[in-house]
Length: 326
Ligand code: WQD
Image (cartoon, rainbow, N blue to C red; front, side):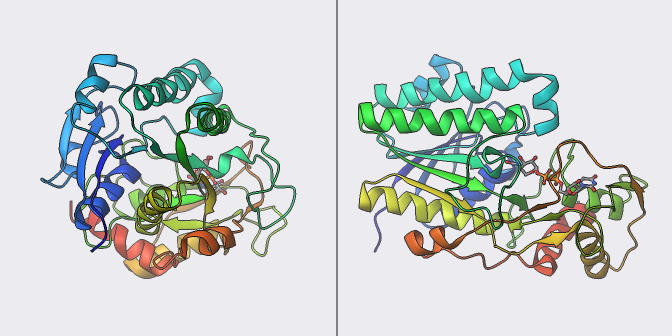
């Protein structure tokens, strides 16, 4: 039987964090969640997970979270809207940078050596070649992406200076909901494509906008690499095992290597739901690269990880119950 750990999951009541919490509990690990519930939802959590409502910027909350010895920290507690980060960088700097450094400091204080970090394809900026592998230059074009890069670099320093072992997992476009239906909370104020499409299907919004159809792609709309959140969750546990067994750092992309246009995504949702998605083509959204697709061989080579649930049909089938039955 594989060893069982005590994991502290910051932001564990949020969208990606809660999927990882379910995966950890399912595999028999003990889980403590630290979440300030600003975007997370209590009802996303399984009863086995212990919730501490608190903030990574608050040392008393961190003391509570580390009261019981922790083997590994998963860090999801961060703001993630790239557009907002350009208008309000101070909000992103405070939580994503200061908060993360505070958490890393707590790991050192409480003797935790293993840290799994929720990073992003946003660290790369505009792709200079495709697919984007881990060696691609890191030149973020939004402040959000910069905050993720800043923490990756700090993790590297703390690894050199203090012996911390870390995994930085660079997600491409996270999407879908738990295929076992355990996570029911819709994301609050979504701006990403798939929840917006689902809100139109569910009648929460009348129509949606497609940002540009004059890109140099087969149907003129942008191409992205959509990765199911259950595939991400599985990768997190593999990354944890890698840290524990190999005692080496890990920096990998999590994507499928396959891209879909915005219209392909909309049509897949229509097919799965049997409903029409009302959309209007509008101008390009600033900062959108025409195509972003992951080189994902390294995660396979190092972890044996490959996406299993990330075809568009499985993605939208997993979202229907959350949007139509709630
Ligand atoms: C996808 C495509 C839009 C909404 C963002 C972050 C990035 C990363 C993943 C986490 C684009 C189009 C969207 C809509 C549309 N986050 N679109 N109408 O921008 O690729 O990446 O999430 O680390 O940092 O920037 O994702 O879902 O916003 O957009 O036409 O209402 O859908 O233009 O082509 P994006 P997205």
